[in-house]
Image 1 (cartoon, rainbow, N blue to C red):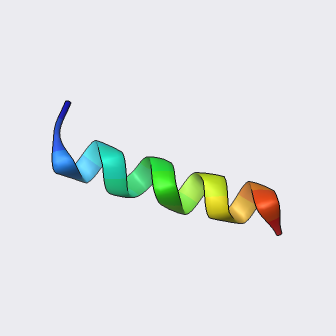
Image 2: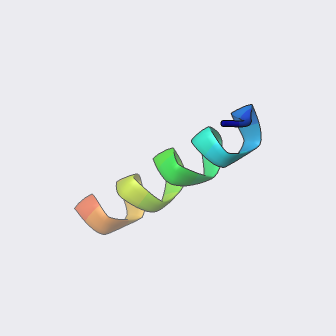
Length: 18
């Protein structure tokens, strides 16, 4: 698992929460 993928996942999750 790459750091970039992790960052993207966090961003997507944050967007979903909003």
